Length: 323
Image 1 (tube, helix red, strand yellow):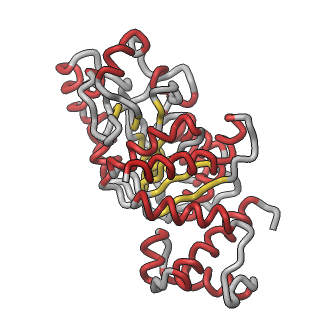
Image 2 (image 1 turned 180 degrees about the vertical axis):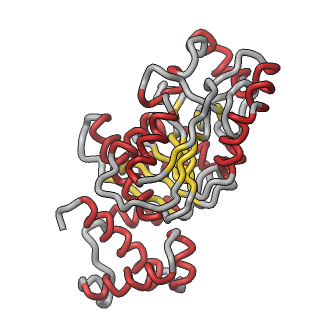
């Protein structure tokens, strides 16, 4: 059971057992909560019995993390929280592991003929890079949820979409637009172009979304790489109350889109569009992102979070203070 995929499967089996035997949910309710089919939940519960995980109590090597996942899901209102142990002081190593876990979660939820929309960003890039030995999915499509900025792999959403689609043997759409328009008139013109509007319409209609979450206060985000003028506008940016970045929109602590000028110029689906996607997975690692994660959660834009343990505990503490 030392293979990462095995560990991820044990995690999901234990979650299903906990929901069934501790929370008293039916298998149909568990299937809805976990984004799995009823038959898959049935097999996971049976596998848990076969593995000896069901006696008088449920045993798991992930007990502490699963309890934290459960508590964070309860207080945040998220449908699912997946936490990777923070086993390194190296932020890049932590992000790589969180990305790998996010990739495993994504692979477990994707089905043939589904459409996935995604953003750029370091968290999403780590997820794409962490995909290993996935099953090809007939008819699967990947679409960008935002425009792009070329120059860095993690700001090029077309690169991320193409790489992820290739991993699953699917098809990727390409966004032929920059991340930001220069004026509101230009924004209206760009978003009105069929080559752009059809991609955004497909993103809004996606079955699953994969998005990064950026923290602005500590610049824990690739947002400052998206436009050459953003660093020069920091005073205006922070004056708007911005603490978080989601799909190149900046949000205040309550999760509301601020009046910062570039929020009106970004070429992307809106956070409210994201909230309508059935499965919306936010990926973030690092305690400096805790405030941003709280803002995104309070805005109700995602229903699934993948993060590391230290960050999860910081988010939980902040949410308890706010409740």
